[in-house]
Amino acid sequence: MIQSTLHTPKNPLASFAPAAALSRGVSVIVPTFREAPNIPRLVERLAAVRESRRLDLDVWFMDDASGDGSREAVEALALPWVRLVERDGPRGLSPAVLEGMRSSAGGTLVVMDADLSHPPETIPDLLEALNAGADMAFGSRYVAGGSTQEGWGLHRKVNSVVATLLARPLTRLRDPMSGFFALRRSLLDGAAQLDPIGYKIGLELVVKSGAGRVVEVPIRFANRHAGSSKLTPVQQLKYVEHLRRLYCFRFGFRFGAGAARAAANPVVVVAPKFRTAEGPSGPSPTR
Image (tube, rainbow, N blue to C red; front, side, top):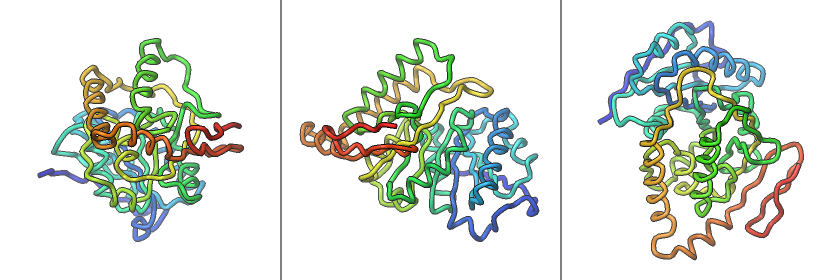
């Protein structure tokens, strides 16, 4: 049984939206492990988005017993819409995200990393895509208007390309590795049994939730602000095992038929100008 400790700062004057409205709002889930230096800056940027767009938004840091001052960093902010849960259960990004989704109250869920690689300023675009009828919306580096900050080494680029190609039979997303996405809680509630391992919870949800319309919103993927990457060879091996599970779930012993169904899922790009990708032979998104 998972035991968690919830830390909620107590400064009611700092709340922008009434607490009673949070259940109808947006919950941002941020898995953390030794990300204390990044927390204040991330919350600062989320607060700016929250206020400028008048969003009913709360933040859940799901912490895997970092012991690095993450709890103290959240307490020092003294914002009632920012919470930190110290988890005592299965470690890992995906279990942390799932626990955060189930613990939070927002009718809309956003998942993002703590290291500032995902731009909080794009959250309104993800929400706009959902309001326009999408089942899920992903922040993408690989659609028109998306990019990656300079500084990636060859090894990291090759890893990203190979991981993306391995996931291609499961989804038509151009950036299935993205950990920055939004969905309605109802999609989560209707998903098949979720049992991800590793760090690609978004891919798990795309495959198992029955999402028919997934969109990609262009983002600029930034380099880590502070701290060190948590991507290790062990995590990469877990990704391969995760793919094996998803292939078995999607295709079973009828790979060809399953692949056809997967390729038929539409993917659109939300941008100033875009076209809808209708299927394998449909038009590609353009600016």
